[in-house]
Length: 269
Length: 258
Image (cartoon, rainbow over all chains, first blue to last red; front, side, top):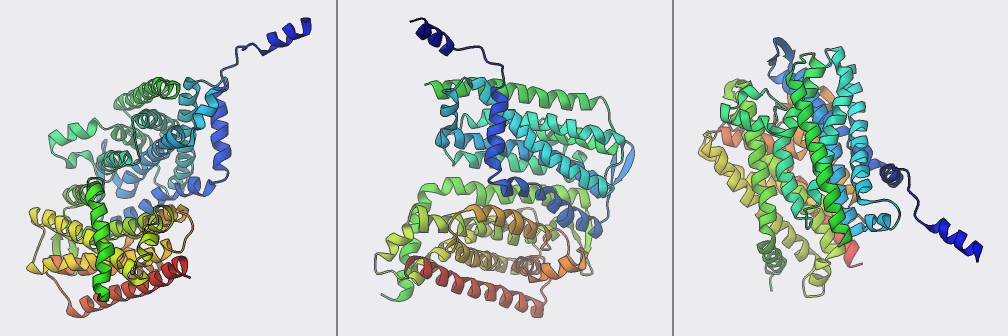
């Protein structure tokens, strides 16, 4: 009798340390050990843009870009933008994998039958997506530094900057997928992501646009990511970079908050 | 029934299916090309201004727009000949259903490729209209760029369909898009003359069917045609179509009939 009561008491839920999010990161890392090629291949995209687009274009029509009172060669202007974009892609496209896990893989249903809660799922997925963004960013940063496209010691902060970018887009991405109904909705994602990549002052300065459009571009999150990283690698840092950081952090926090509520609702009903 | 009429039946099927899903493809076949044209044509043109190409001064937009026409045809073709072909064999099994009728493998493959050609015809026409609206068309010969874009598309669609009928899973498609389609899109002369590339890459660009398509479209739209090189371009593209089509017949037959 006493032993039974003791055994029951042992089964009662005990408060667990809040590591649910980290468990999820571990789970994702284990899964990717099997499909590392997909993970690895994402690293090449910015390099292709750099070697197959930026450098030959610079050879063809040599243009210098004025930025914050300095004159930059074209490659040094575009390279940081590609860094920001690769952090964005790494985080955002990983976050959209959540869609498959949520609707088809039923991954979270298994998790929620353990002490891992919806909030852990949201933080864990965001954290993993940020890790992926940082892997790409770190590797690419080393490459552009070796190519001499980094002009300032501020660039050491480019990695934390990519953390902020990754966080912003991971949060927004996970929140966005909770509203998706089917694969066709991913076309809409493409419809937002591609123009954002191409128009966010990535390949030419924002002054190219008419004024009304300039305001619109400045509202895009990637513009803030690019502006932040570009200021760091070129050493033209100013107060506007605080706005960049605030924008991206705000987007990430809001996304994570929305995502954990939505995942809660989607999984418990 | 004549063999050409037989190929019309799969074509009819793909159109019937397309009538239900065209909204989704409107994004990839109209919006995406226009976005590229605005960002890398108009925006980049405003940034780079005028360039010298083969002894004549052009605005950068005039230079890049016809190249993007060919590059877009390649991208649309690559999408249409990868997942849909594998799906028709493996997941939705439409090829199986077709082959259970008097249709033969060559009818099915020809019908599907004709459908892809029709898709590119639509995209290329819209695209040329947009280029013309921006005033970057230099000659009535530009109209010929539409069939050339279709040819460029088929030169990529046919070999890729051959691969799609051979492969077991769709994992390789992601690698193909990342390591073949994207680099080709960037370095095959769309954004700069390939003579600006390092020598080994320039040699590689000469082999790609896309470069031949880009150069031919550019000659036609700018109205600066060199008959000799134009002929070489057409023949080279036709060779890719012929080779790809034969391969597609072979792999599809091996997968579904033998």
